[in-house]
Image (tube, rainbow, N blue to C red):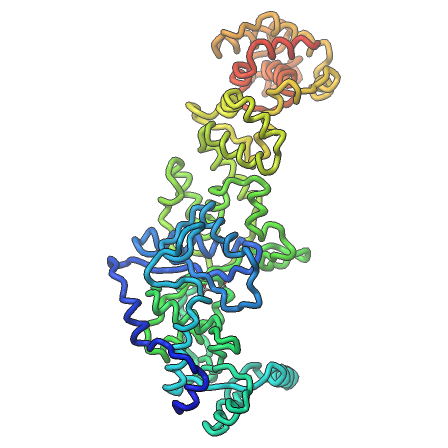
Amino acid sequence: MRKEIIDLVFPNPLPSTEEIEAKYPPRQLPDGAIVTRTAPSPTGLLHLGTLMAALLPERVAHQSGGVFILRVEDTDQKRQVEGAKDLLLHAMKDYDIPNDEGPVLNEAEKGIYGPYVQSARREIYQAYVKKWLEEDKAYLCFCSEEDNEKTHEMQTKANIRPGYYGPFAKCRKLTEDEVLANLKAGKHFIVRFKSPGHYSKKILIEDLIRGKREFPESDLDIPIMKGDGLPTYHFAHLIDDHLMGTTHVIRGEEWLSSLPLHTQLFAVAGWKAPKYAHISHVQKLDENGNRRKLSKRLDPEANVTYFDEKGYPKDALIEYLLNLGNSSFEDWRRQNPDKSYKEFPFNIKKIGSSGALFDFVKLDSISRDVIGRMSAEQVYNYALDWCEKYDVPFATVMKENADYMKKILDIERSGVKKVRKDITIWSDVKKESSFFFDNHFTLTTGEAYSILKPLSVNEIQLIVKGFNELYNPSDDKNTWFEKIKQVATNIGFTCDMKAYKANPEAFKGNVSDVATVLRVFLTGKTQTPDLYAIMQVLGSERVTKRLSIV
Ligand code: GLU
């Protein structure tokens, strides 16, 4: 294209592409090191898919000794939402998804392959757009949005593949004189790619997750520079991933259909294309039993903040996502209960190619295990953090009784083979500990009798009184249990659980019924962690008081 035209398009000086390339030297990394990035467009809520599209590349990059980049894709200025970028940076920090390059919360951008926010790269893109105009790889398009809508309507009606290509690429046919006249007349324009493709040709492209796939070659003359001088996503992807030395693009499956275009852009530029891996969306069943993508509008769990509010530990959500990504995570976790999830050898090739259904039962089970691996001190700190945001009165109780709380949380935790699993989300800490506090423990004898049916009031009273008489807070666990057995025997309940199970009709009750009676009077619940440990923490005063109400 004539210099006169290009000077009108870019009246201000731009760096040459050679100058730009010189600022982005090839990376010196060991063999096999993967350079990858997450490239979100911060447009509001933080979607679960966005977290997944950050976590998986981060794992892959860091496990290979490579580089993980955060690039903020904000070229669609209309869709930008104030504060969305910070929300993202907070999440990356809170969820411990560290990027080696790009923006970081409250710090200057890191890395020498930046800037990493696309709106700050305008000149770079324009330098390449200019070059492509010079080399006839791109052209100016003066079609208005209305023109394009009309064409689209016509194509849809006539059942023709929609788009700006072949016979529909009107401006591709303009002569340079016509282009110049339009420019001089001040007509609005964009820049389009001059696609060399033929739709009837088939090409094979490899996706690391989905294998080799056949696509029709792309013949779309897509916009590469919009009216506001910023690039489109496709062009920015080409320029940035080339300059930043990205070896692998790991992104959502919504971009799979753009693969023929993207590989074509790399070919036209004469650059090596990165390897691609398209991650399936997390799905959900709709009311008719059909699978659909989690939707920000319809599903609260599409929003990462939802899990914070509910009180899931951050690591639980991360482990859940890893488990969705590589189904072998579950076995690995079982075999390596004490390792950090960061040691799990995450494998891109083992990412499932069909979308997994979001499963709260699984998330809950992972969450119970994650909390089960924590120390009492950690559970206390995380739960307190959560309560300070979402349950201030209980946060106060926790702070005023910090030592007592930690002892409560340590029951069936340190030094046991089977750790308690009664805490799934942070609000369970209150649910499972409030009975330890007298002002939260309001059980009446009537309520206890009703919980303990079909045991008779007489039997219950004999048990409670009988144990209270024998109770000695300094008993060790064996002696304590012997006393429970003694109470059972005294009232004609059996201690032989095998015999009881074989023929329950032959007995009035058993030793476990005795423990249940005590449990209900002491905690208001029929199921708790170890009763002996609970009594130790409650202390003799509370135990005696609670057993004296009958
Ligand atoms: N900005 C795109 C998105 O948010 C990035 C896709 C990519 O990773 O290339 O989906």
